Length: 125
Image (cartoon, helix red, strand yellow):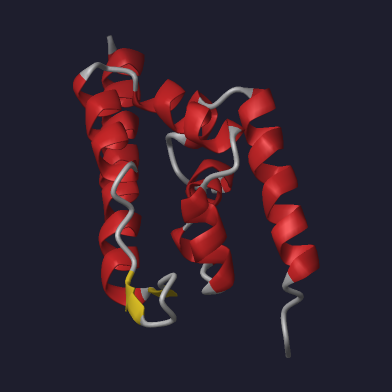
């Protein structure tokens, strides 16, 4: 019973963290529109997908599915150099209780995507 409660609590924290990066991206990231003007970034597909995954007790598989395919949102966050707002960062954070809920292949996809991101955006000291 305790491990079931721990898993439920970990998933609730994952949902909260996923919503937090959504809200932070909405307020902190600006993207360029096709007409050259700029606007605040709104991940219009991301939030409903996360909400649906949570409501259906399928948040971990939902996040794994999002990570498996490159998304426009990842591209926008990459352009803004905001890896802290990427789902991959949540999946890779071994200090979080939900880290252990992701499969090794999902973790590896996230690791590879972030390694590619870091290669394209080396940290400047």
